[in-house]
Length: 298
Ligand SMILES: Nc1nc2c(ncn2[C@@H]2O[C@H](COP(=O)(O)OP(=O)(O)OP(=O)(O)O)[C@@H](O)[C@H]2O)c(=O)[nH]1
Ligand SMILES: [Zn+2]
Image (cartoon, rainbow, N blue to C red):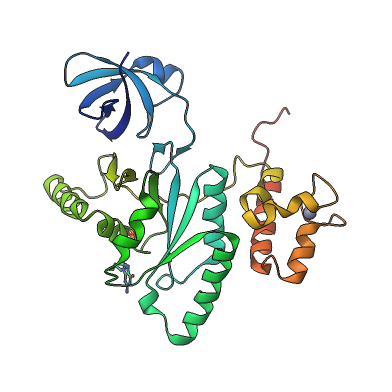
């Protein structure tokens, strides 16, 4: 049976690039998916039945490495988290929320810090410290500014061979960045929105576009992450600087809260783990622990 990958979803159709990579088949999902509550996603590897050269039906969706809700995409390798240094102000708590969410989906985060040009001298220092902190944790941080002519070149190696999405809150510069990476997209997006005169009722369209031997989602995403599926024991694994260290805690199930001989708290004391990162950890832990149980027997 022919196999392929869904590269685009539009108006109830899935566009499957066949395994040879030489043609797109316009497919419908089979009814059986709805019963099993699987809805095919862009990024899915599938088996399909070809009705003719151009049309077919998806028969099977292979197991996913992960899936995102917005944009609705599966098998994502990395997320470029777009945060602005200013307008809106840099927001470490929100960044850590995104990082935690992304880590919990087994997606590699890359931080892109936009609008560096808007910083005054005294503000630059504060932002530089944050950049150093996140780099020390092991994250790649890509600072950028208005008219950054080398940005595209700097991002290309990062995109190579990976499935990537952009994410970030409104107004941080996601579209600007996307247009820098894919200049052809700007035109297209513009044309489509003009042609359809689309306002609020946008057609749900998601596409993975080939760039530098990788794939990039043409729709940036944002999800306010509520920690609704994470267990409290899983949280510290989403903070890379805690993940390794927690093996040194006295108790294997240590939540790094009030337990004795906690390696994490010791590292916060010495400054090895940043105070604000630990505070954010505690805040997320509190959110998880005060969450109402989803399935209750009473
Ligand atoms: N000064 C400066 N302005 C920027 C930079 N990047 C983006 N902007 C501006 O910031 C504004 C918002 O940029 P967008 O790219 O529309 O942001 P977005 O994240 O796509 O926003 P939403 O569509 O609301 O999600 C625009 O006016 C951009 O021109 C930058 O590096 N420096
Ligand atoms: Zn501990």
